[in-house]
Image 1 (cartoon, rainbow, N blue to C red):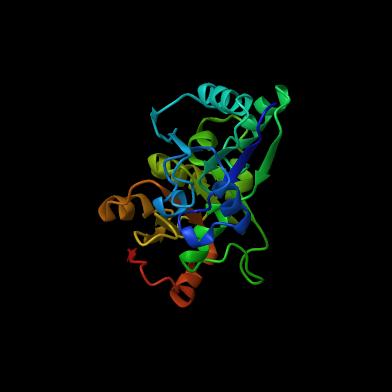
Image 2: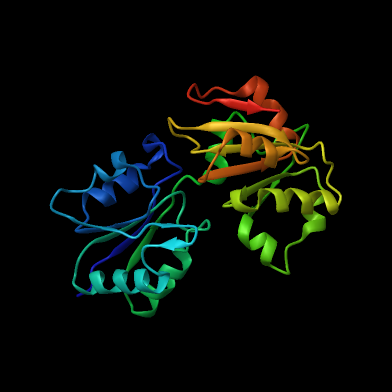
Length: 252
């Protein structure tokens, strides 16, 4: 009889943001298959007798291809084990959890989705930046840096000609190109931009600039992935709303 697989969101980095359900699933696991950004404090909930398998990914460096991870989940579950697939953020927000769930469903393996707090909302919050605000932004868009540049379907005009907030994940390697695209398509070059490195953790740093200069600000500050990029007038509120003490602001 097949075991069960929990597709778990570990949250954005701060271990205190892990949900109670996620903690319960981890404590009952026989196998935990985890990603690069999962903190040691969260892995401490895993029983010492459980098997731990690292499958972390970063740009151009994948420990295991996604197809191999899918097969590993199936293999362990078919052994009758309780498996936790532990991901940063939320499994269904750019976490490829949908693909993994499809693989399990195709083999008739029971699974549950355990949502996590996404970096989309948590990282700006820890930087003192609300994504929506009654006077400044009625909504927000979320894109990934690589896909928005290389997809023919990216609605650049929509992203540029709006007052809504734009959140960009995995965009550090393309920050200059994305900024230029937004300006070319009509977004004001003076639009505020914040880049938050290692958001919600003790290593959090924040660089603030505009579309016109943010790539230079980030280069001088030597910020690196993982980072979340926030574009929009809501960034101006950071001056009054920053509350997370480890944060360091680098502005130009």
